[in-house]
Amino acid sequence: MVRAQQNDSEKNRTNYMALKFAPLGLAIGTINLGAEYNFKHRNSITFFAGIPVDKTNTIKIDGNKSDVTSKAFSLLAGYRYYLSKKTMSGFYIEPFAKYLKI
Image (cartoon, rainbow, N blue to C red; front, top):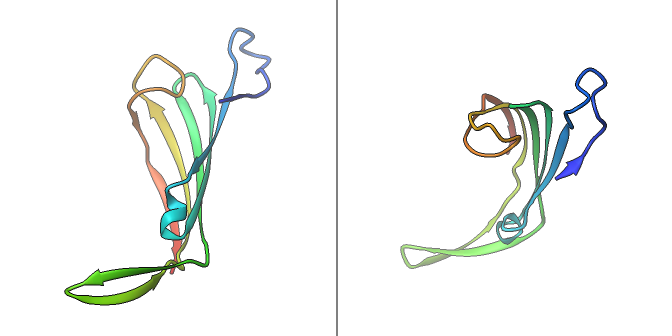
């Protein structure tokens, strides 16, 4: 978690920003990057991007082998409301919008 600038109206509070990376996505041919910015105690906004990587995987279905590549690009933006009392921790509700280009 990276600390951001302190808000002047709330001197005892610090805004947080988390940068996220999903390394398992590289195994299927996608780089997944994200960020979450906490702007109020239980409220955050999120942004994620899925970027395809030129990688071919071979899968076997019904005894036949096929080469598969990931070419999908995606963007996701959302608003998170955390149900716990800790900042950016625990269960949350998140309505989001997603763009997917195949």
